[in-house]
Image (tube, rainbow, N blue to C red; front, top):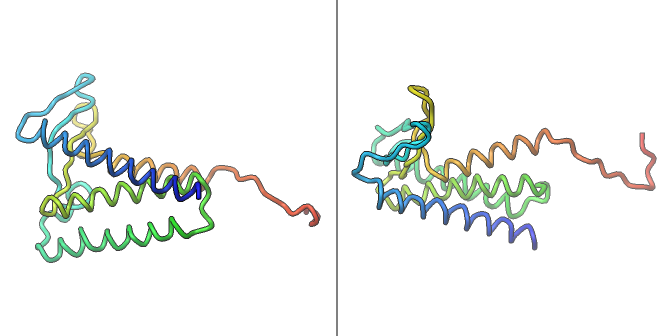
Length: 168
């Protein structure tokens, strides 16, 4: 039961923070120049991404965009959500990581359905001309989830042995 609560809470918080900050971005950044902090290292700037990662695929037809950028990700995310709820193989870190990935992904797909195929992005980081693409909190949650998955894969695991079996 604790695992289910962790999954649902992570999804609700992830989607809630992402959608709330996107609403703030629309309200305070849309049609404005944006703001810069830490000597230009961090910028708030409004953008709508009609493509996938870094805008790739933004020139797809409406039909292709619907299937490739809305329905395919939704199907994959629902499959991952099912795996997340029913897999007995995931440890706590992997469960939390998968929930972050699914929550971020679902929030971006919800954005596509609510915003005529676009995802609201509003953050950018970098030094000089070396900058990230413009991103949102869903993207941050996805990247943190991927990072946690990598840590979980390489973190030393304690081996549990049956005491009646001799250890070799």
